[in-house]
Amino acid sequence: MQVFPMANALKELTDVLGGPQTLGRSVHTRSDLMDFVREGFPFEVLESVIRLTNMTREEVETLIALPARTLTRRKQAKHLQPVESDRLFRVARVAAHAIAVLGSPQKAAQWLHRANRGLGGNSPITYLDTDIGAEQVNDILTRLEHGVVG
Image (cartoon, rainbow, N blue to C red; front, side, top):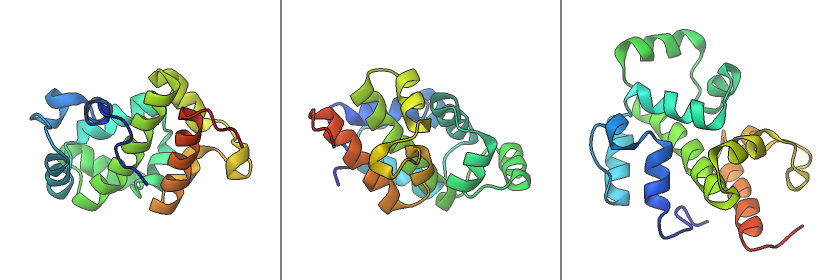
């Protein structure tokens, strides 16, 4: 699986995460992103991804494994734990790929929530709770990107 399928994917991914202003510093390399994940993202990064993907509270609870009470604590602390940041990064990575392929955050959010035949009628967003599921969604996006249907 290609984590960064396009040449400018690092910038697109950074934009999904809220950009340098939300992250608190610039991202120049994949290692920078790894460092951010290991430190734990600022809470605003989660809010940025939620806005771009139209994730519901239930989806956040499932995909990021953040129950409502924990989510409230993270918001007060203004910081996510590294494991939560890693899960959020997985969602952001797929969202950035969807935006690149489909052309806009709105189209990507709609596609992520729409039933997909390649996923047995399930929506892509429901697959983003595991790496293997995210890989399946990225495979479908790559096929769309290259005009391969089915």
